[in-house]
Length: 343
Image (cartoon, rainbow, N blue to C red; front, side, top):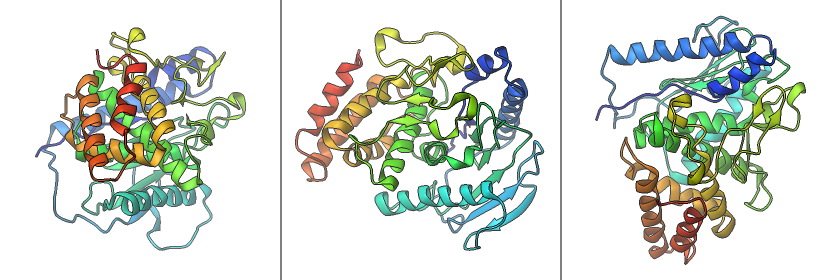
């Protein structure tokens, strides 16, 4: 099966626009480099066929490369699987947090690395100069150091790394197109497992978690803010630097226009809110299992309506097998109804 390897940035372009307008140094350059790296990735994909492999392609091993503040990946290999910490905090953070994500998928879902075929995990740190982003490009994870004002090093956040690596899981399981509702579902599943993995590692519950995504990477000028809130989409930030959070939490506010790949980050707040409401009732671990089992059922052009049906169906199957609490399908159906789905 041919797959679509998307280039998925953690910070949306519309946030960069606000940062640039409000005088954050290097924001415009970060945005330009994000677009350039995305175009390079698209050119590579257009030049060759990309296939899912069912055979083992690696050893699930981590390799950390130092980009030496250049706009290139894989410049110098500085740490390999099993090697001790080195004198590079970002490299050690990336190595550790990626290991947490990899090990979660193995222990909880018996998944062998991101592709379920033991692919090695390539991590690039110190990408560019004061680069305010992190991205998955279909093959590698790449992290900027941040500018030290708006954002700090992206390697320090477990939910950022879990979010981006889950784009890889989605790539191999559902092959979701990165545009419109299928793209919003792509972002949604990454936010879901960003918080599921963080809660699992921190020993949190749906009640004790803050349900914020990206709060750990906020720099001195943005202390107390976050990039997204799954509990209350649209409330993660509101300041004179980032502007106002554009995410929405109900279909009545659905974003119809071309910005943000037709709203992949903006509209993902709708299913995000439904996941939060479901997890509050049946537990984050149970909700995560249901969403994970539904993911491979989605088509590349999945809509919100089709996703709701498949998620509820998987809840019923897992309930019948005694793997999630009784009443889970009804809880999930009610949660989606709160956000206006299905329509």
